[in-house]
Length: 225
Image (tube, rainbow, N blue to C red; front, side, top):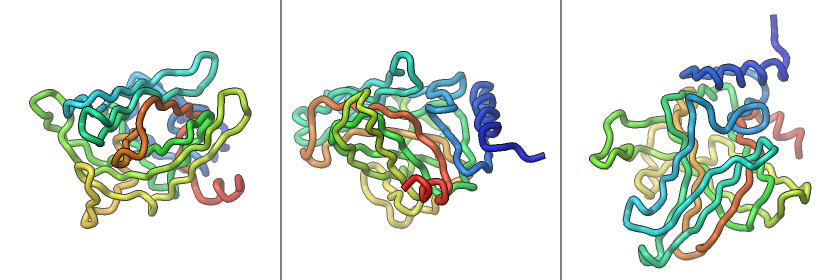
């Protein structure tokens, strides 16, 4: 028996809630966060990873928008303390593994933007050992930068950012890693949202309201354009 797309979405929501370690799905679109899924579950949470770990002063927050399925990623990006550099980010935690091998990329739906540049980060590896301060050890990140249009909540204006796997850039400790192994799309372990200075090109307060983050196939994206 084949399940329809709506039924698949409902099933995924139940799997997310009960904390399964792997979520292989084959529908044309899989809502990972927001929409038909939860941003925060017993198996997945979000935590701040800001430049304060390097002595900076930037700070980020991650909060659910009341009476909606949206989330607000906000904070302040400081570039003075670290001499022009700076970053503020939120990343998922936990041991959950997403199998997204059946999809062509990630789609981010933005409800409210501020005209600034953000970065979506994906990881397929999380070292088991920790640093002395309890933070995760460095590993290869797969990054995509996207700029948001200025809009406000309630305006009805949304932006869908399509991120095909081929457009993700491998980096290690902030530097491009051209010899990285291919992204293991069946073993996605971390999602992060980052605001960075891009060498003093942006700073100050930021706010990004998201409706959802989904894995999708190209035909879904094509139908929406």
